[in-house]
Image 1 (cartoon, rainbow, N blue to C red):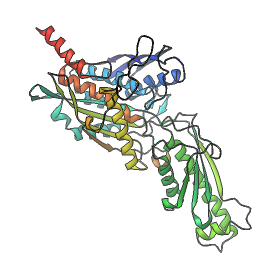
Image 2 (cartoon, one colour; image 1 turned 45 degrees about the vertical axis):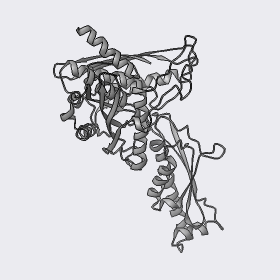
Image 3 (spheres, one colour; image 1 turned 60 degrees about the vertical axis):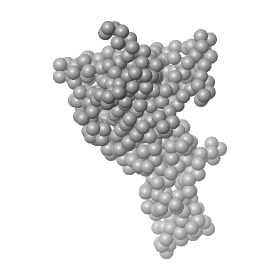
Image 4 (cartoon, rainbow, N blue to C red; image 1 turned 60 degrees about the horizontal axis):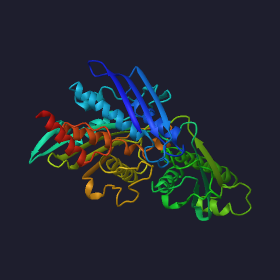
Length: 448
């Protein structure tokens, strides 16, 4: 994607107008062309809640390159790199701290978001995320840069982001719950666990709603022959959408159990009820519930990066990255944390390492991991993750999504940190040592 951003702000730094135009290269086929590009404007623009005018336009083009498909962040990542980089440039031009600029412009809880389909921001801890990240990285002491000697300079950068929780009015999730003999439950879901831990999370939600131990909920992973319908594990929808289907199924199950025990008041334990229901019974203790949502409450995030640049070689070392996320109420904080860490590493790879290259005929040159470099644990420095909870009333136990938002902040935050360290503003990715070294040399030649 190529994204052009125009911003208008008053003398106090209030962002009054945002204009975004995106050209998206969908490759040889249009599998995700129209939908992916939409997120490049649909997600970044609503972050700035005081804008009185906004416009988002895009074009999608076919080329002779590899077909573009779905990837974490799904177009929002590219949009955030452009818009957040533009916000950082605006702050520098106005001689304002970019944190301060965001604090006076960020969307607040209770605000209607015209650029987000007119939805109301029903749960938002973005202000607390910013304050926490600022404290964690020591922003005031490190901003904008520090000379470390021997040609090495450290700079800091910031970015914020939002995403969504499923596609409003479209996504559906389902859950089938059955009471088995001896009083344990079987939970069948149509959502696929892709490593997100949704089997565990949905079992936790069921156990909470049913008042039992998580060990008493046996989860049966998706099998399209027998599982209840789910439109798919995408759009950061599983915990928010399918989780609420699980809640509804559990509530319906409790009604069924109460109905059965009214006929059999002599039964005292769940084990007794379950075993009794296996004989002489015409009331099935099995339910299936489906859920959809007319809204898609966004999670929010702030990321701050500290980099050290060797001005002789252009080498960049990511010293520290802090991320503070508002995903509503985290159902499983440990799984949420590893989701954040994994997404950050992908965002760091996008910012500093990963560079798909094509020949003139559209053949990909770096089509193996020998040529296509992704960051390893040794490349990413310290990653520190914290949460600031809000409560989303439409989600299960106050939860929103976390799957995609976590990839969105590294690229603009790292790009600004490099700018503060070198004075070079990079607008295309990845930012390689060669680009930095050549940029420094060109700047030296210009000055001389």
